[in-house]
Image (cartoon, rainbow, N blue to C red):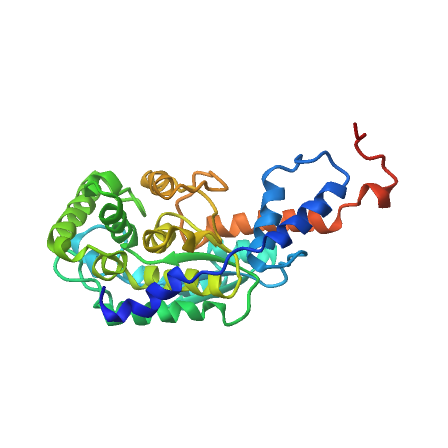
Length: 338
């Protein structure tokens, strides 16, 4: 492995464990709430997830955040997207102006929204002709993504924006898990059949061009990935070190988690996968990592939207856990003991 990635590899292996004492405290309170045990299903597990990875017996969601990472891709020169790459910057402006779906979700549910722009005027290399990034640029972008925790969030939902990035995500999955471009590409922003064929062909040509350099996960990221994917990986690394739970968005965001998982499967234990995308290969990628998504809403928007909705469920779950009456406080008889 190139020396540029040495510190990143170390961080992916030196991961702190979850706090099982905090989980036990959550379960003890849950047993006292005015409901049958387990009756809130996944919502109960969400509170345990927060407690385990925040290391708090009484978890918080005082400062939840959606972090969107935006980058541009040289592979768009191959006609792999229904939109020109100028749309990336235009959508970033829409996020900050409050006009995007993610902007409205965050405003309605009081979730902070931060957008990290990654050299939008300098697309990565066209992966069918050259590496997306050199190792040093990739490592520096991962390090930049680690800054997402600077505002001390107690939960981060990670998402992305980048015209062409479903193509590079498909290439990453193919390199990690095998198969051809046709096995991993989808319609993304809405390409027609000819566009879908161009996407699959671009992935196949990229895999063939870089085959000799794809032996290690971070080399795969540098050759085939994008700045936004590298930065999301950085956010995943930093959150584990700082005890911040993560909700991962859809197809492209999952590619960042897949790189971490390929280095050390335990490195993503603090990550929940917010939803399964309508991009058909997303379910296959989640299965390859052995993870189960929280929601299946038929969404394929990106921009952190599915992860944000999962965060809304987490907020609801925690509100119930903290504010429901106990059997004792409500004067309700508990379950008879044998």
